[in-house]
Length: 397
Image (tube, rainbow, N blue to C red; front, top):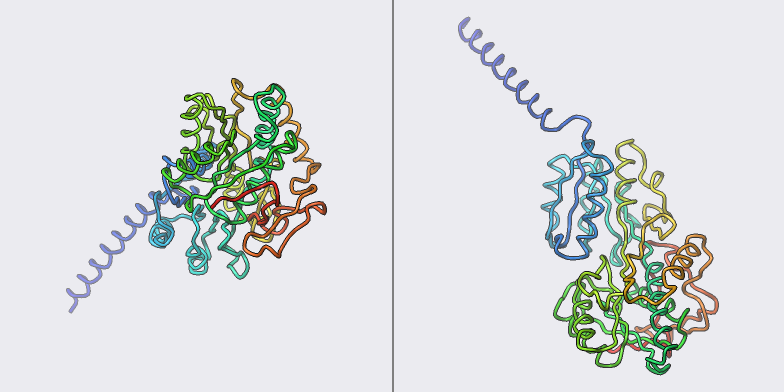
């Protein structure tokens, strides 16, 4: 009996020692003081949309260095994101950034209250009724689209004033993913920017039915060029419109391009005027700082707050107009857009205003008079202007 007691004691001591060793090893792998940050991407860095998000990830690395450890999962389908999110949480992630349209993170946020879930806002997701550790955010991209429209309008003005283009031919095109307020708001802001310089301009819009479909985007861009559009802008996620515009310009056609998510001047050096993008870095850097300091994200991040839903424009660096192509931009364009950006920062420009009537594409009886003005992103980071300007914008599919 005495031997058994001694053996039991020895075994217990060995187990405790082993546990202590393993615990010490685990503590070393956890790197005390290092915050683990997770990113879940719908695509990978080969696509402009996710590549733009990866810039925020790298900005975090530059900002915090060894104070953080970043774990990322790419090419995650929305409906299959639960497993990779659970994996990241099991690996110790304390704040997650998610760039896809799915309500799965809301459900998981309830299960893991110790993790902060930060998701790029989507029209299908409402912040109402979500747990305190769930947050949404988005840039007020309509501001950048308006300014890019000014750059495009300056080019139109140059063509009109030189006689290279007749007033009735001042036609711009827009390749959009689908007929949602996000897309409609964007192309409306773009056209209003164009018309602030070239009031002769009208617009034709074509939808692809997808955010990322290279072939469909090429097809719709070609159709718009055939119809006489001399400037094409886009709210889709690939470089296809830029490629087609460059091909057309190389063939001697007068056509220019405005891109999205990244500069496309290298892809279309003789046709790409500029691009717009949302800068996700300010939100990511400040949200991580909040978690590091055990503070509420919305109290740390500089933005317009709609509860736990945040948005901002040029004034906080959340949206950007990328480099102007100095070889093709009209003279005076840089000064013109710089002035517009400064006035947007100061709240001196009301983008959605003027002698226009907007028509709800779903219910034509529902109209809006823009003489009274419309404040975009007033109540949500999601764009909400979903009216098509009568007489000035034609949707062709």
